[in-house]
Length: 140
Image (cartoon, rainbow, N blue to C red):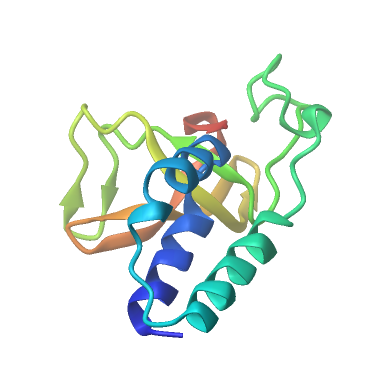
C-alpha cells in the first residue's frame, strides 16, 4: 500500500470514534486508489482498526475527577482530550487556548500524583508526546 494511504490509516486510528465516522462518510469517497486491489487492502485495514475494543463506560466514568482515590484510571490506547493551557513541554509553552487537544494515552508515568504520558493527535511546534497530570485529562 502506498505511503500516503498508510499515513491516512495512522491518522484515522488516532481520531475519536465520532471523527472516524465522519471521515468515513465524507472523506473516504474522495480517496484516490491506483487499483481495486489497493482499495480493498485499504478498506480491510480500516476495518481492522475499527475492531479496537471500546472502553467500557464504567472505566471512563467522570463522576469523580481521575485523581481522586478510587477513581478509574486511564488505560493505554484510550483516546482522551487533554487541557494543555499554561503547560510547558521542552521549549514550547501552550497558550490558554489549548484546552481541548485530542490525544491517546501511552502509559502511566506516576501514581501519586497520577500523571500519564500521552501522544497528541497533532504536533504543536514539534511536540507530539508529553506527560500530562490526570486532572487535565478527560475521556472522550
